[in-house]
Image (cartoon, rainbow, N blue to C red):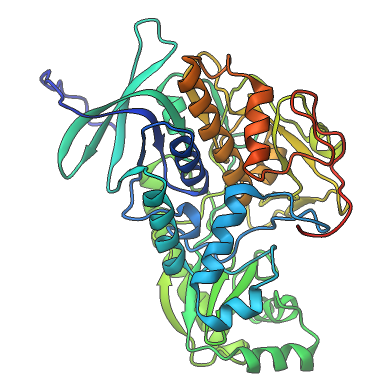
Length: 463
């Protein structure tokens, strides 16, 4: 419902900061972008609306990192791998031992991860600003560059001027405010559901494992969930748990079920989703206590500050990555990352099936630089789940390891543009690729900058 409008008086807005590179959003993509830009010599600031970094891994308590490998070798390396390994080393000794060699589905300890990200940002010389929203962007007179953003926080309203800007909001907020065209969801506008993730304490992992051995049920509790649905203890929906991530023998992160019809770009719908999500968690907690041995005394420690959001905007970029590119495992002359995560689309109603499409083990496809370049703007990059792709590929690219890779490429590109006085499209792609290789990014076996990856396969194990 609309209630008319008012006209605000014009006001002078103070300039609170001037930086070379401004990163908006402190999730995986934003952290990697900011660190990479700063390490490349740019004065860099990162703006985050919460009081901590981490995006879905901390804000929404998504319980585990998605795979870093193609089931044969690590293909997500560089900053993303270093930060995950740093989290492992910062966790309790038992955690380190169990997950030391793991690269796929590594459990997240959200409080440890927050501190790891804080330290990494400060060590790189990036200036962080928490508790801040971007209210609007200011474009150049020709509308082709972003001159800065108007922010709002407890200090008031102010302007941050920048030479380059990287949109890591996950929703393409900065691109949308700049007038960049975008798509949202499927053909009828439907969006993948969100999930309210949470942490349970006072659980007994050993008893749980004995239950699985005795019953033959899976770690996702397929049989137990189906039984609970048949008896009315759970609503109809996905007939398994998306994931249990054991931070310790008494603490587990849970990703289970869906909240439907929530558009993550709208505060009203996020509000409804949060309330419905917490109610869903309560029902699931009752299920665990009644049906799952080891969870009889489970205590809900925390639920996500918001739903885990899988899908909102996808920008129109210089190139749209498609499902055909994924299936063919294509490489591109401007590759800046590789991806092997399966197409993982959670469909929009409880009666729909999920969509999965896997590449063979050892195979990956390239992620071209152009998918991060929003049309019409010359000093803006977009990294993360809102890059230019079709809906199917977005269901693969959206996960945290890929976001690290895209963010690292954007931050490195911004530092090169600053050095040369260039725009996002006039930097040297071979030099960008060479810089990424020097940062331990993997772009394919035998990769030669400027020519595309020779092969996504690589002999040998993790280096």
